[in-house]
Amino acid sequence: MKFVDEYRDLKSAKVLTKQIEEVVTRPWAIMEICGGQTHSILKYGIEELLPKQITLLHGPGCPVCVTPLEQIDKAIAIASRNDVIFTSFGDMLRVPGSQNDLLSVKANGSDVRMVYSPLDAVKIAEENPNKKIVFFAVGFETTAPVNAMSVLEAKRRNLKNFSILSSHVLVPPAIEALLSSDDCMIQGFLAAGHVCTVMGYEEYIPLCEKYKTPIVVTGFEPVDILQGILMCVKQLEEGRCEVENQYNRVVTKSGNEQAKKILSAVFDTIDRKWRGMGNIPKSGYALKEIFKDFDAEKIFDVGHLEQNESSLCIAGEVLKGVKKPVECSAFGKECKPETPLGAPMVSTEGACAAYFHYGKNKFNAVHTDLVK
Amino acid sequence: MCLAVPGKIISIDDSNTELKMAKINFGGIIKDACIQWIEDVSIGDYVIVHAGFALNKVDTTEAEETIRMLNEMSRLLEDEDAKGN
Ligand code: SF4
Image (cartoon, rainbow over all chains, first blue to last red; front, side):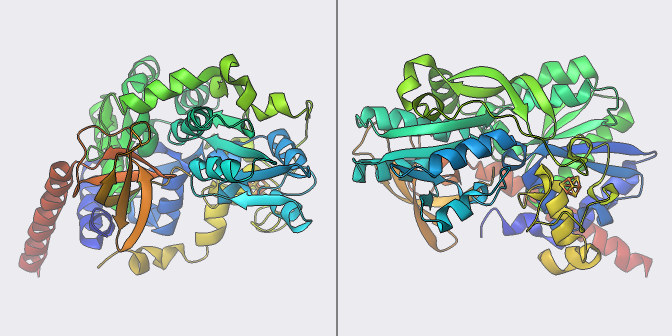
């Protein structure tokens, strides 16, 4: 596929690896914030290509993983109602709540449907006027404008039976939470390319200056990630800290103005709890008061649920990059993708799940999956 | 979750001015996506699509420049290796 295959090219990967080897003189710890990047790094065995001085820390950038347990339980409570058709992106369906997951609710006879786009959920609402259609609106800044559009579209079509269960999270406040924590080991960041496609990268400049940490906006293919690492290592070695853009074929400084306009028209910024990381100030979006008729939490009385995580799980430390998944005593034993104990084992983009899937053959992954 | 992939616009339907749509070819698979947020968009453009929405155009000049530079360096590296042997 054009503009994909070229970025999986083994020869280009080797060029970049060699350049990284040439510039690196001492140990550096770099965090990729986005779960999509973590997945690529494990899939293509990128850590094995890098000089030993470079440690990659895997960040909390998987919206599926960080959606709090109580939000999943709310989704399950709503989806179990007879008058509801519950719609969601596929990867949320198997996330375990405190009792079960959405797939088992579906197996028990509830109407739970996977959609590719929230606009599909709006269409379902139009076709089923006697049912209440709820869309599980999770995601970072990449997905939030798309979810916001579904609300605007439902309003435009005058639908009274469509609502969203909103659980949006934002990247810059999470970066700030990581950088300001006492046990922070992160010296440079790869920022998430598709989040920045929407938001641009201006909001990272003050973070970069305040914490003296380089931030490189980076894409998702192996060549992108290696180039992002090279740019970050160069900055660290030269004692610079700037926001740079590796993913300039897609990301512009100011992002997508139209999408940003829709975000500010539909959502307010609120404090949010992240699974494994706790409450982070101003780190989420909720529907504005004027859209309360589209807010599933206001329509359905699902109450306030507080849930506890497994005591074995060290997800908080994994999500902050303080520990690797394999340092968890439950990894691959009590905790597996089919029976996850914590957030990062839930989605294929979670660090624990990525280690579980690709850890076994990571030494040959790079040679099998890159285009020769 | 934030997966977004590049595809080529093959037709545009702007009959709904608040929800402009396009058919997009992803390496042979054709899907519909909303192109409302992309300015100056035309058939043949590459766009990056997430959950049914085009988030931005792919800047093909930037993309091709990066690839060209990497290919060039890779050739230099091979020449060096050849000399070394
Ligand atoms: S392996 Fe499982 S239990 Fe351990 S940190 Fe990861 S998600 Fe938690």
